[in-house]
Length: 110
Ligand SMILES: N=c1c2ncn([C@@H]3O[C@H](COP(=O)(O)OP(=O)(O)OP(=O)(O)O)[C@@H](O)[C@H]3O)c2ncn1[C@@H]1O[C@H](COP(=O)(O)O)[C@@H](O)[C@H]1O
Image (cartoon, rainbow, N blue to C red; front, side):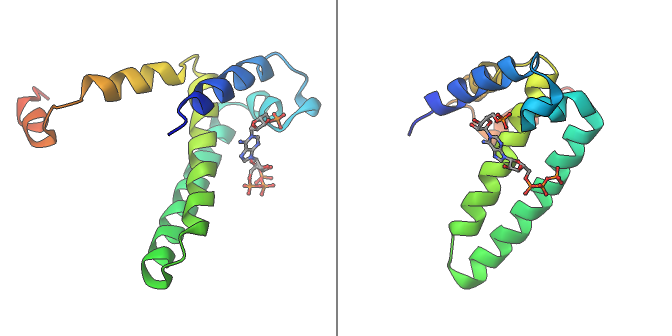
């Protein structure tokens, strides 16, 4: 698995924050602001869910892969807009290694 892609993409997204809005899609999203970015995350979430349902019945996984890539991409733009790098999410997932989801849920205080 090539998780370097996430890190490399995040570097590009960071550079786009200071680019002119009309020079790139990511720069245009940052210029439109967080609400527009969240609208895209919501839209891509719904498209991913629909593609997953379709994949379960048709067996064709290409659309759900394509839509999940759109969703991950827009989620990375959201994180970048909030000055959060993908390392923070990867670190959090790593922290959860070998931690049972059921045990973690039972240990929550809120
Ligand atoms: N991975 C992506 C990527 N995935 C999806 N998209 C774009 O996301 C956009 C939104 O998809 P939609 O299907 O919703 O398109 P749309 O209906 O035209 O969107 P809206 O008008 O509703 O906003 C499309 O324009 C896609 O091209 C991406 N755009 C950029 N990247 C990466 O980001 C880098 C920087 O991109 P730029 O900022 O454009 O240079 C690129 O080099 C790529 O690595």
